[in-house]
Image 1: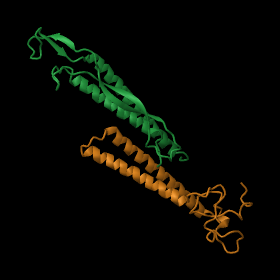
Image 2 (image 1 turned 90 degrees about the vertical axis):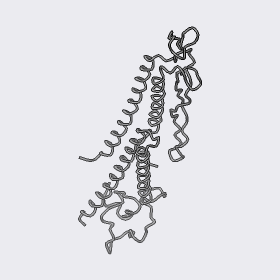
Image 3 (image 1 turned 180 degrees about the horizontal axis):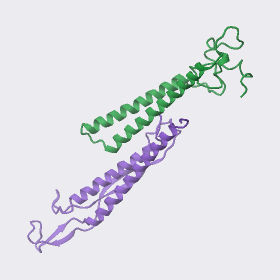
Length: 143
Length: 124
């Protein structure tokens, strides 16, 4: 199979991974005030863990170039303790009037969101450059 | 490159390879010209060409590859538009890849036509 945009598979994998990271962050932000999850406990912050995997789908035609490719290994819970807030009117409050709110710091999530967005942008720039290089190469010899 | 010294072994074999060295006008099948007739020996391998796929096969494979990429792009866009879980960037990148492959194919075709027309313009 021809690969007019060489190495694009790695970038696509990175874009996929960053997309997942953005999804997880948006889930964290959306649930920043969820005090009662399906298990009755407050929502726990989720973190993505990235890993490198050797790509197997390259086939034998591409001289066996086994480059490690980024992918999301797993989505884990952040095990920091929930934040206790004094809110006696809340139905989820305990006998002392304290409500366990998710262990989410909105500023941390915003910083993560910006980081994921910038990484996504960088990978898009790689795609853009790759394409422009291919098109410029195709125009060799034109005048 | 000396234009005359290589005439006897040069073969005009367009179906095998558009090799400019091998495509000299003097070797066109003119009666009385010494050297191998291009049509009588279609299997002859021009110098520098490995005895692998013929150029026609390579071109056919390129076209079918481009077709595969176009189909993949269409499938991605269809999936996106019908609400399946296809990420936007994958659809766009599939389209770009199909676009660049198509441009490459068009470029190869232009080169082939150019060399053919150049040959036809040549005075014998």
